[in-house]
Length: 288
Picture 1: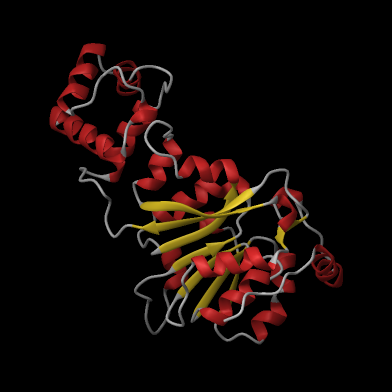
Picture 2: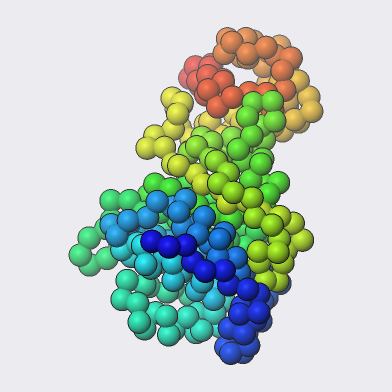
């Protein structure tokens, strides 16, 4: 299928003007106007007619139309009531599109997938999301009772780089995503690809979600309690940050790290997902 043609900012302006709308800064609205980037997003999602897609923030429906051509079903969640109204014509001619007015952060993904006939075995998330909800939105789907098989989202460049970081540059955000899936940057997207252009460049981020976490831990809750404790004072050595975060003595924290095969002098940013998993297991053994 051919890539979408480039849509200049003038067309986006015209669509907004025809609908009597404007980009709302408070909602983080930046409309994608580069067809080449649109093509990269759609290609990264590996869509088939059997796929169900949840799109967050369809806006003018530019990405939505491409998703409808490739996926079997699209659920578009839009917080802006005026945008929902503007999408009415697209919905009327697209039987495989459902538009829902609401805040995705207050909607359980399972409720979107349920239908009188059946629930799809899996779904994908594809979205050009408001940047201010990036971390929360990713966690919302990854921690849901029914996780997506794949997420393809637009994020700020620096946030994308932080998410795909390797040991040595890890952060709490990186660990929180990599526990659930394998993230990768598909392409860099310059600010001029949007109307109005944001102040920073972006990247297309793909997260291939694991069927089960890559490490064996008592629970996701126990794992993240341990990780948050480790990052509670990220500039300190782990024996000190863990002692602070878990209310342990320094020697007790050092012993815990040694039993997990981790040098107590290391810092949280240097640990891999596997090492956090071992540390969590040792903590569970200690406390059980």
